[in-house]
Length: 191
Image 1: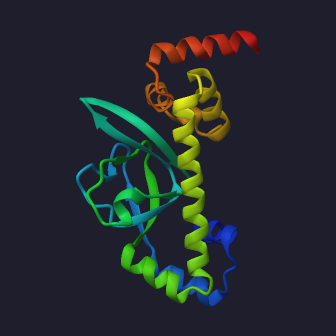
Image 2: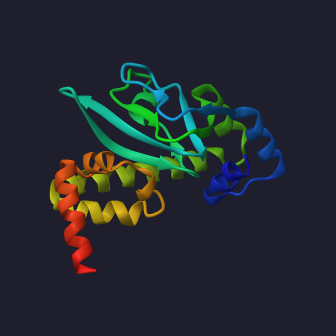
């Protein structure tokens, strides 16, 4: 739970009383590689924190899996589009490795906001980061060439690029695996 507390402290200071409250609100969960935290059609009932491991977000569109995002250690995982209004998700969240997460329910999140001294400030700052990241990603899909999207992926996820199968990375960038191979080859020749 140390990593979770340090991540929260990135946004707000925590007293020992705050830490004790947080410890009662989060539950540890283990995931096997390939297991889903969330499947399309389910309502996202929890926010998860990645203690260890890696997940991908994807949607099944016309029989093809389209990867939209990754989360690694030290990051929060959630389909906020489902979680906030409590509506069925269109997204799947799948473990790419054996993973350990801490989960907090929407009810316990409300307790967090009320009982942790700067809990509401934490929620506002954390969701602002998610929003800005999502907008950058959407803009990139519409305005950036695939090679630039791949370079952005490498800059954003340098420590996990080797942990993710290339076909998931290609899907995230919005291209076929063969196109990603050509981009990687061109990049290797220029370096």
